Amino acid sequence: MTATIEKQKVLEKQGDNKSSKQPKDIVYKTSELNLWYGEIQALKNIDLDIYEKEVTAIIGPSGCGKSTYIKTLNRMIELVPGVKTSGEIAYRGRNIFDKSYGVEELRTKVGMVFQKPNPFPKSIYENVAYGPKIHGIRAKKILDEIVEKSLRGAAIWDEVKDRLNQNAYGLSGGQQQRLCIARCLAIEPDVILMDEPTSALDPISTLKVEELVQELKEEFSIIIVTHNMQQAARISDKTAFFLNGEVVEFAETDKIFSTPSDKRTEDYITGRFG
View 1 (tube, rainbow, N blue to C red):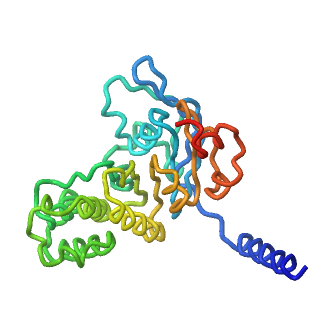
View 2: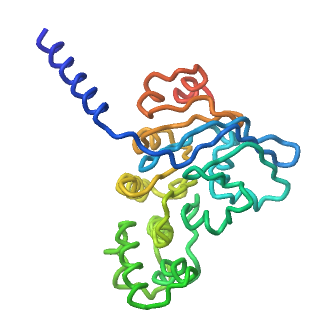
């Protein structure tokens, strides 16, 4: 009986905490998004809301549209010949497909980290300073501050502070990926897109990146595509399950992995297919 009472108190406390939380703003609102590669439809009627300062995981089997979806969020998908879209993606209330919305303007607010680390063939310092220089910052003192702040933000400053002028290719794979995250942070984005950022890393480096993601969500909204369901369960606040170009289910991560509403979601996360 005592245990039951204590459990009820915990549940009531959780309810109080939830009710006291302020509602978060929607960063991205995707409405009836369809996308075709030529005649092949890759995304079908996607409706999805992404909230600020959360980690949103996109999971699903290979070829389900995960990477295609996040590459629409910064319009990188338009680099692929023959791509057509319909529907709307609103970033902070503004349709990113509107002709008046310059892609450069969007990408200063939406950074991206790719599957494989892709540092520039430059020094560690120049990798991080590249974005700010492109945006017109030339003062060395300001660049020095940005580089240090970004490398600290990516939890790699202490490992590289004494070799900033060395080539970035001399770093380990995990360090290169955190350098790429620092390069992303240097432009002070609002959103960070991550397309399977740890799939090419060893377990120790993966853990460091996961810990970093948890820290970064205090300041940034993060959308991460991952083939690793355990990773999604560990680091995300909300999870969307994609299948055959559709969003089958989108909910709090705990719900997706404990009590999914759709049988297809349950079958995927329990390993029955995928």
